[in-house]
Amino acid sequence: MSRNDVPEFDELLRAAQHSAVHLEMRDVYGVGDEATDFEQFKRTGVHPDADPATADWGGWVPLVRETVARGVVMRRARIVSEPVTDYIRFEHAGTIVNVAAGELVRWLPRRKASDIALPGNDFWVFDGKVVQFNHFTGAGDWATPKYSMSEDVDLVKLCVSAFEAVWERGTPHEHYTV
Image (cartoon, rainbow, N blue to C red):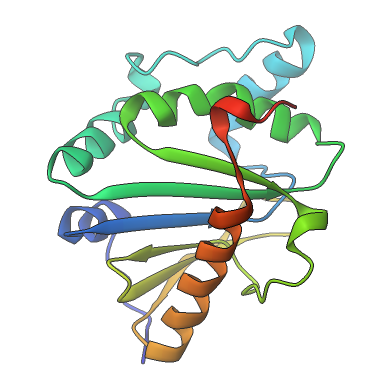
């Protein structure tokens, strides 16, 4: 069953008991709150906010640390085209914050994902039971609605299978260079 009344992300993460996995498949995201940092990165080659202690990360870093401290394993996998886009270079430079907060992150070149059945949207799966899809416009900004959610067993199974296949083939963040 799909739900239109999707709980907020932090509610889903706080309810997770064992695992939260995230698969990202776009080469460019254009979410408005990153625009200034991304432009600065393109000019300087340095991520302007790669410090987990800054106010901009004030919601994310404590939430991840709280989640990991409860014993929930948080994994993030990214499928990327190579050579990577400027945005992926920006994202890679900022991933140090995700790792510092407690996430495990891997990268998979798109050419190595050709035989993996992938859903059409980025997603999170919580405890292997609930999937939350992230919806973006063609330009990479948040679409309306931003999210949809499903507890459909077959759909969750597809997402878990896709994530695990990508994770198995992916390169850990500390070994992936852009």
